[in-house]
Image (cartoon, rainbow, N blue to C red; front, side, top):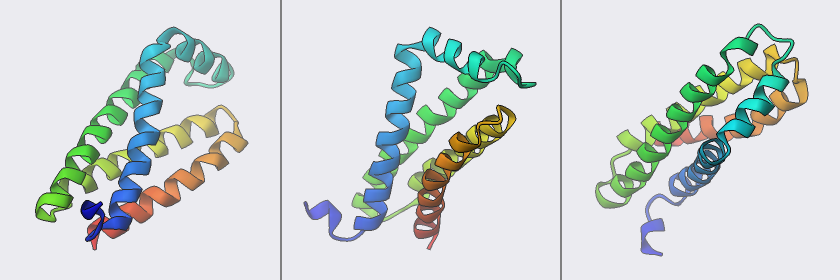
Length: 132
């Protein structure tokens, strides 16, 4: 595991976020109708209810791009020590989490909004260490 010698914290944060956002993307793709149905019901009393497919599509694109940047970022971090791509991927994760937070607040799902905090803290920590 020599690739962990120089940047173990950065790599573990990136791996955690890659797994989280890859599975999130995969779930949306493999069960698109179910996801849209669930989210539409979740937002039934929200001003966002008519925009669910568009918003989920935007979120999905951001998640997929973030995962690719983070994977590419690990490669560059290990091989040449640069953090540019990893940082961009983690910043996209933060943007997607903020979008999800806005949605949860509009849906008045305060418990769901609160649960995003843990992911956001780790993401901001990742931005901090990759920016140092």
